[in-house]
Amino acid sequence: MTSDFAAALASGRPLVLDGGMSNQLEAAGHDLSDELWSARLLAEAPGAITEAHLAYYEAGADVAITASYQATFEAFARRGIGPERSAELIALSVGLARKAARRARTDRPLWVAASVGPYGAMLADGSEYRGRYGLTPKALERFHRPRLEVLAAARPDVLALETVPDADEAVALLRAVRGLGVPAWLSYTVTGGRTRAGQPLEEAFALAADADEVIAVGVNCCAPEDVPDAVETAARVTGKPVVAYPNSGETWDAVARSWRGRSSFTPERVRAWRASGARLVGGCCRVGPGTIRSIASAPAGW
Image 1 (cartoon, rainbow, N blue to C red):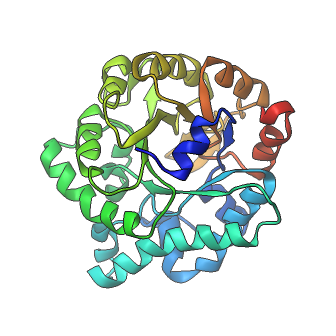
Image 2: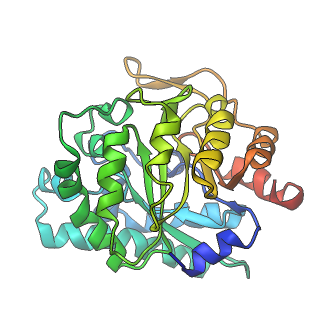
């Protein structure tokens, strides 16, 4: 599939992704402890989302990932928000990133990736890191398609099918993006050499090898230590550009509801990922504008 974003990706210049939306919003004083997470601010404080995107663009990110990860018709319905308003909020996520791009003080091209989180994100019970929901790929396709249609109609540059824990859900997503006219990347959350659901990464990445809609594959929301082998495998199996945006390396303590340990995300690691074939690199949870700035300002962007 050809598009301006796909052409930029094929040009050979590495692209810098943004960092975590939630940590940037929390740093600005917003409470994200409810089930909607950052998606709640689409309705209650959209300006805060624009400011978060702007912080990353001005730190040197080329691509902003929208605040639609947890924005689904089902999740909004639990809050009493009807389908029409839900669709408006999902589409708004793209508009807010576009607004930030217009405000950014830079002449370089800026891109918007529409986040499509997994089914488990809607459940808000941690199952996005396990997969195995007990649903068929067809049922998962029916869940994802309506939101994808809304996001595609808002005209992002690319759809970010991200934090996918399970190859079965990847099958559903690959079916659901057909015919939308917007390219996509497919990004698994992994541990070691397997998806969170336990499938070998070679098999998981192979699903996207012949998908014309998918212009990049990779990993996100995982430990930095898990990235190098995954990048090499994704590039070898699919022949497509690779995307990598792991967490900081800290560990979430669900009992204490706090992060433990130290960050292991460094610009030196990013250079190694690039050498292994990564073409889009940024961060996920706990990776902020400072780290993105260090990546973007390094020689040749790395």
